[in-house]
Image 1 (tube, one colour):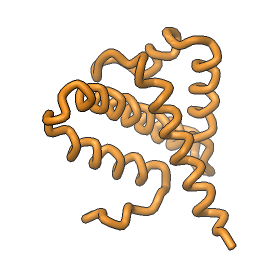
Image 2: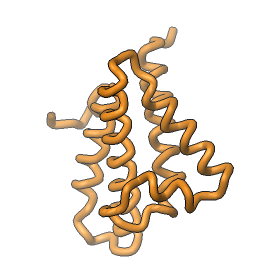
Image 3: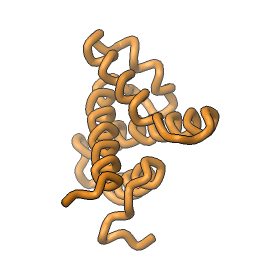
Image 4: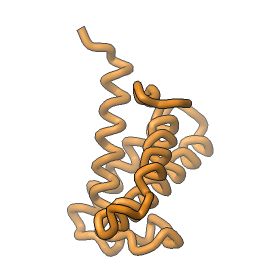
Length: 120
């Protein structure tokens, strides 16, 4: 028997990973606001990204808190996309630890349990 809370958390993680995949080709720098990438995306991808943003921000909390969480998750997706791009071009860049940190922060914000190998 599966746990509905765990299933929901896994679905959120899949949504966040998909959002990162969608944004990655359109994020050009860490200084860029993630919303700037949406207009550069094809319509179908932009629609999917916006739906994922809405879905991952649907928590039972005050709207201001949900908006702050959504912004933080999107920033993390943006930073992760940039770091993955740098890592793809330079595997010895030392970004693996930063990517692990980003994943931990993302999981916390998304309400996912810490990874088994986490030292937090």
